[in-house]
Length: 414
Image (tube, rainbow, N blue to C red; front, top):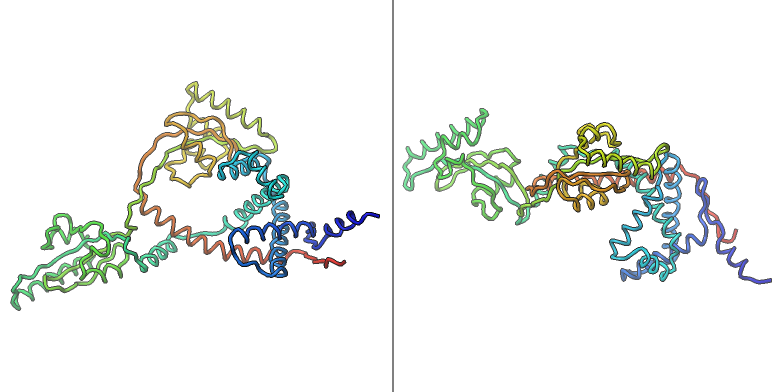
C-alpha cells in the first residue's frame, strides 16, 4: 500500500478549531515558509521554530475570528473590488497581471491562494474600519496639544510669525527717561491686558521701524529671531503675547502669531464633483454602469449636473451639494478616484469607473496651487494621534474577539 496518500493526509490534518472554521497543518506550514522567506529577504535573524510557529498560529487564529465576524456583520468583498486590488498590486510593482502570476508561480504561491489571501486582507481591513476606526475621534484640542508638543521639540526648520512693540530708550538715557519709557511700556501692556488688539497698540505706541506694519516681523526661523525674544517665543502659544522684556535698547513686548514648518508646502488641489451609483441587491454591476452611461448622456445633452446628482447619486453627503466634493488635496480620495480625477481635463466628464464604493462619473471644475502648510501640519498631527489611538483600540478589540471566541488547539499526533 503506497505511503504518500497517508502521509499527505497526515500533513493536512486539522490542528485548530476556531468557532465555525478550522486551521489545517498545511495552512500553518505554508504561512511559516512564507514568513521565513520574508525574514531571509530582510536579512534578519530567524527566530526558533517553536516561537515562529506559535506567533503564526496566533495570527491565523485571529484572522479566522475576524473573517467570521466580518461575515456575521455583513462586510463583503465583491469580485470586482478584489480584481481592482490585485491589478493595483501588480501595477505598483510595474508588472502586468500575467507577469505577476508568473512571479507568484515561481515562488510556489498559487494564484487562487493569493487571491483568497488578498480577499481576507480586504475583508479584515474593512471590518476594522467599521468596528474600530469609525469609532475613534480626534478633537481639535488634541490636535492643538499635539502641535504644541511638536513645537516644544523645535527643529531648525520651524518658523515663527511674530510681532513686537518697542518702547525705545535713548542711548545715554538718564533716570527720568528710563522711568518715562518704563511707564509707557506698562501702559502698552495694560492696554493689551484690557483686550486691545496687539497690532493697534503697536501702531500707536511702538517706536520700532515696523510700527506702521503693526509690529509684524513676518515669518522667521528660530535662528533669525532676536535673541532676547527666543525664550519668550518658544514658551508662547499662538495668539499670546509676552510680558515686558527689558533690553539695552528699550522695553519690548512680543506676540506669537503663528508657527509652521520651515518649508512652505504648496498643494495641488482639485475642485471636483461626482455622481456615484452603488451596486446592491436590486442594481447589479452592469445595471449600475448602464445607469451612469445614461446619466452621462443627459449631462452631455445639457442637463444640470447638480440637479442630476441630487436626484440620482448614492453618495448622499455630496448629493445634497449637487455632487460637489469641494477642494481636494492629494491622498484625500481613494486611489481609483484620484487617478481618474488627475487624468481628467478641466470641465470634461469622465467615463464611468469603479472604486470600492461603486461606479462613478466625475467632472473637474478647477485646479489651484494652495499653501497647505498649516493644513498639512494639522493633518500630520491628527494622523499621529489616530495612529496611537488605533494601535490601542486594535489591541483591545482583538483581545476581546479572542476572549469571546471558541478556540480548540489539537496536537499533531491526535
